[in-house]
Image (cartoon, rainbow, N blue to C red; front, side, top):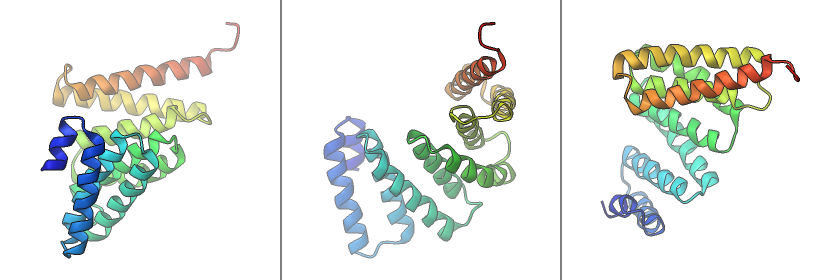
Length: 190
């Protein structure tokens, strides 16, 4: 609670000390793997707040792998951990890894959570971003990103309403993907 309170008050360095001590303690006392993974997930958020993206990525990967082994690929916590891991990969522009991860996990999310779930929307948005933000994106990648974002936005608007922040975020990505596509399709000097 102290670590989360410090995070809420934007005292991230202090929160980091508390969360690292908490992780050490839960390991030392032999807490359940579920509890250890929860503490690690909180620690990863603090690393990200401090701009320590490499450390955050390492911990996010451990949490995802741990939840995959412990809970299986269909558990909502595993799917959430996969999305968080993909977001951390995105901060480091490791787009091929994002695509590989989300190509496996989005079909699972769609089957388990459904197409109307916020996590499914987030995963599809993250995947589309990995397509259009990649410097090596092909025209096919850009078309796929636009199509995926259009579909995701349509469903998200119906489910969440047009004013929802998640819908606004999808819309921002869709505009960016469309701009990237137009720039690639328009010959220089036109």
